[in-house]
Length: 172
Image (cartoon, rainbow, N blue to C red; front, side, top):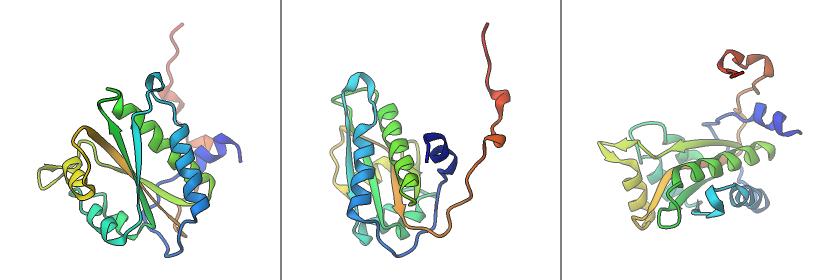
């Protein structure tokens, strides 16, 4: 599969089967995270793998809507960015999440980016909720987490014909 094929195939999956993700698959996803470029190569991101079903259930309630899929995921990878290392934590975390999402796609796994940054649970920032669940220091920021699992319900791939090329503008 070429990179463009993986990009076309990458879709957000919100339902997962009971079959676990293997250690080898998880290792490849984490390698992709560690390969993600960061501003000035500062590498502020850390990756917390959540496998315990009770913790996944707690994380599924970290915000008012859009996180409930975590309850049935096999794993979640929370991206923690150290603000003492880089002020580009939001961008660096986003790139790492994207790399993991693409690797999960290449492996045939279902995955979904669960946004945490700028979201809330009963008017409490979701970052604070996640930080408390995982006992994470306050100098770490949390943009999101990637839910991962096997799925028989991955949406069909996009096609190049769907691209809205009117959004491209050339300055000449």
